[in-house]
Length: 279
Image (cartoon, rainbow, N blue to C red; front, side, top):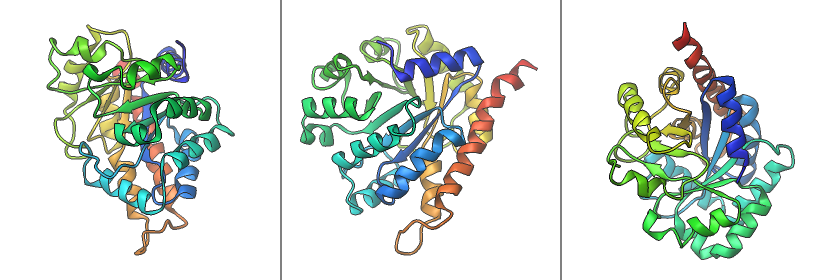
């Protein structure tokens, strides 16, 4: 199965660099602003776009992404609007991979079969569902793969060699390595430990390995990109957006530019990684 995700990582491998994977919450702080940000991300340097599916109980997320979900839900964001956002994005961008990330409950409520049909039709390429372990692959993972969507799994520092094959079994697109234990946005990753972990995971799979959790600066992105096939940044972008909101939580005239400026800086860090390493 060849998807936009597979094509993008293959193209970047030929370029000799890692991917910048950006996470923003669909509908944060409102539908129009989040759509405008999504549309601006590729031009700013994002290679893969992750969109959060807002949920009332995001147990794996830190305060920044939890708050983004609350803002989105308060603004009326739901699964129908999230899929509509992807459809709108696809009208002007047919190349950039889009991954929906979140929890199983909103998909289950929407209806799995209906969701997979609508997500595929909207232009979604992959799913990251953090609360569905491999033991429950028949719930969503296998039907998603059958419908042509990548199912991207998380590996963590506690995923040992005994557990890793189960995690990787039906994973496709890329493997998302969570560089630190705990919630998103909590601490900075150790580049040395990340490099060792990526090497270990690659002994078990040919899939690209993208690394996330805790990457906030261009320098951190560059360091992670030395070893990984992708660098995922979420909380830093969500924080940059939040800092631009007024007292009523509304986006200001500079909100989109603030987010895309940070993405541009991160992209520069990622793109210079291998060239620096080669010198």
